[in-house]
Length: 236
Image 1 (cartoon, one colour):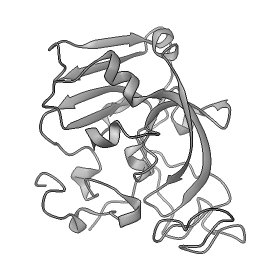
Image 2: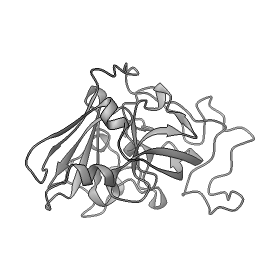
Image 3: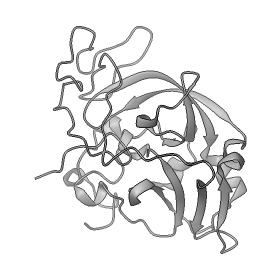
């Protein structure tokens, strides 16, 4: 049996069933599956637009202590060493913004989010990986993890978001930072990120070890590990 689907990061609250919002009813404002929004292309297969942004949790919301908080890059770095930033240092890194949809594997899509934060490419520039690195493991509070391909980490729009729609992220949506990978299902958009690990060999993260697809492309509806093709993932 598959585990309950995540929204992202360290989320453990029961999720809505497919086709339902957090309140259990998509309501009149939800679009039909694969429906079209004015001026936009169709949603990924099986997705709908809810009234709000459901909150799904795995464990409690962590407390943010800025004087103790840090962000680390470790693993197969080009220098062989680790990199570390305090909160003030990290929050002052070069920024970018992107407007992108947010696709949860539980089948809701939040359209047209204006994300602002530190792009993945900025971290690569400041903490170069070894040329043999193929994947990144993203680590969050409580030991949660999600693995993504380096190509996804370097993709346009991938960033460590601090703001959404002009405001700091709410605590329950990942404050102070969450990774945003707009072109993948949102459990890869890890909340409460604290570190990334460069890997020369793929390794499954938390939900990937528990029955979820290693790649997580919403346009190919890659929700579960039984859908994986040869070469998509390491063995379970």
